[in-house]
Image (cartoon, helix red, strand yellow):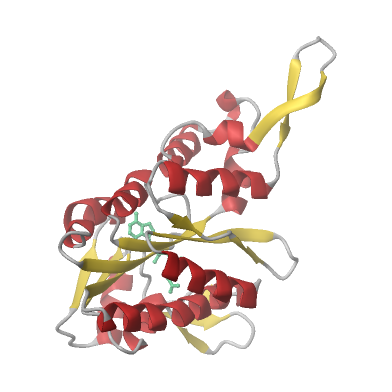
Length: 270
Ligand SMILES: C[S@@+](CC[C@H](N)C(=O)[O-])C[C@H]1O[C@@H](n2cnc3c(N)ncnc32)[C@H](O)[C@@H]1O
């Protein structure tokens, strides 16, 4: 199988996961919680470093290395070849479940219901698709559970490439639907544009594009106010070699302790 080549911004994401998952697992275990790790867009578990070609562990294998171990692991990917490759990397492991399926449905029907505040079951969940394939309902269900912490890849470069039209009718229907599903409603458009200070030649109000920060901050506000995550970290901008923001890494959870640890880790990488 051809492994994906990844840039430094993807390796930073993996380092952040490594830095956070270890204290998370330790704290949960020490306090007697049954805790799981969910990789909802897991990939094959290995990548190739763009500069140099060395192998780099992907997020599911990073999670499996964490000490103390999680009590259960859920790895989901739509691509059967990647799931098979990952199964070979993991080998036989009694606490790992693989799903070769669309993540949104599996998450809502099979995985998230396993974790609840009342049952003292908790999970750390990585939501890292390539594109706008993550459904807001999944994020909302995680927030409502009060039992799940999430890292989310907020793909701002793709949003700007495909959805940045003042006039909604100029956005391709598929892109528009994907953006609505990701955001949960159409309010993303008013977060992406604001009324201009000037009127146009016809005396009508123009719209100006807001900054990337405004858009991601509006989504973070939804994580808090609509999905019900009590603690949302300041978004971390992940940049490519030309310093352009590829995506923001978001973190949201029900606990102040987790939020504080992530804020410290983000400061280190920011
Ligand atoms: C960016 S990669 C994940 C990389 C991984 N988090 C890591 O750091 O090693 C995204 C993965 O999502 C998978 N994917 C895309 N759409 C999906 C969907 N709807 N359901 C499940 N997996 C999907 C792709 O096949 C791909 O392997």
